[in-house]
Image (cartoon, rainbow, N blue to C red; front, side, top):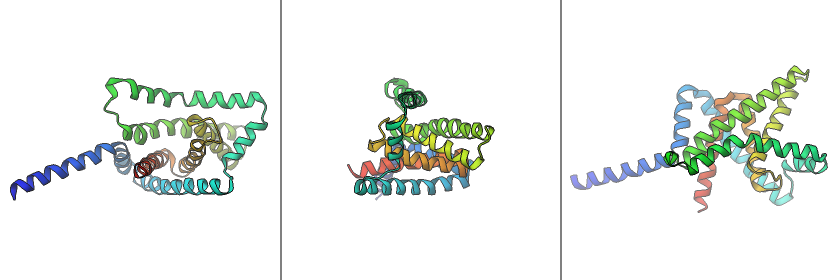
Length: 221
């Protein structure tokens, strides 16, 4: 009995450790966020559920009715002057540069082999991308528009919409692609979380959303 008990303890401990390591990024985000920002962490978790639901719903509507919020951006880029289109494409490339550099370093640097997919997608990416797109771009644009005399509500809406479209474009520049459309919806959700609950809420929502995407991909094989 002692032998079986020890073996069972070792087995389940190793399984628990495997689960922890494979979800280390999400666990770390929730643990740190829950300790320092408990209310924002709860809000971020709830926001992630809403974002996953919105992503599924917009995808279902798009598949059935061929209508998606990304169509607005697609149409705009079709009719906009070439200089505007090229400016948008250049902006997505420049703003997405830091994330691409980090991803490349993680993939190619032997010293970063300990950074697994969970740490990369559920800790590093949410912190980096939310700092760039929500703090730097969304909040920065809002302050600039307000300083230019635009009402706060309109400035927040415009800056959030621009940040979300650039966020999607940094992942895939084609508004017709599934990745762009799904990322645009999640970017809108992260922008709302930033507006309502600040950076901690946006980061937790981003981390939990990415964890949900990984889980869905795992379940689909």
